[in-house]
Image (cartoon, rainbow, N blue to C red; front, side, top):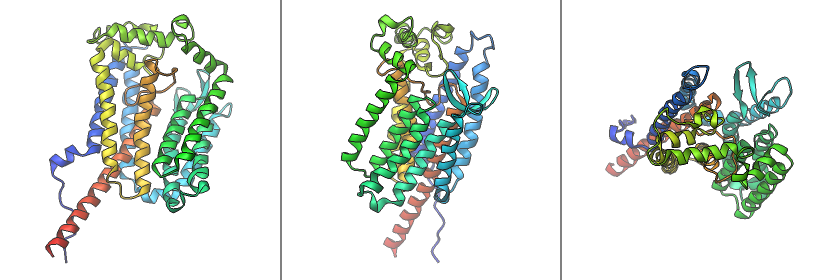
Length: 387
């Protein structure tokens, strides 16, 4: 009987695999985030460890979820894809119910009690990707049909995006829609369906912004940052001032002025300008390069996908990380109107750290399974050649 044991993977190859690169990048970004958060906490009356302690808790829980996700049987979990999607959609509905959903800063986006709260839309994103990947793989031979290959999957995406927008959270809704359309395109949807969808989505977001007084004011102010710097674009103006003050080398860790209440949400959505001011252009470019490396490593990893479901699932995970980072970077540098979007692995926020843990766990899960499948296949081919 032939020996079916899987050969040991050489250590050099293990360290060089794409998911290992993604994990190393994630760890580097997390360490940078902890450093900047400690610096940003120095002026708070709660103490220098206020954000740092919460972030460490989020990292610990994220690691736990990462380990769980890395050991799941994804093919078995597919049996419950619709139940998972339905449960998350139901939770998104609960968020909108007064007295159940927690309203903070004008948005009703959280479930929880007291200071303990979770942003359900973070988990709904990965639930949407999982359900969509399952549907598209299940109907792989019928994707040329406009109903099965476009109408039904765009309905799945639309339900999640609409519920998130209702909170309202336009940034998260745009991310959900964008990642969903990318997954749909990668599955083989026709361009003649994709392009009108993008145009209609853009029109829909424009109409929604114009009918929302807060977002309309932000958008019109964005068109003239200088003349609205004391009101509508104050946060963006201070963000750009932070980059200018930092220059190439930065003013030094803990020496920035923007964290001293000049820049609102410096620990969350606008943490990147704090990096720019304190550590300079070198570190901001390094952060961009790290996210770019994560994306390229993810694309390389996708080449080994054994089936359409896992290919689309992993592609969705990669875009959930990298597209979110891109939106945040564009927003804080004034390339697009400001959006409430965390910078993955760096910004303060437990919910997003938990999401990142799940996404990394799925990538590790597929790396382990795809790697073993590839080794087994190479071993089988070698035995056939020698037979």
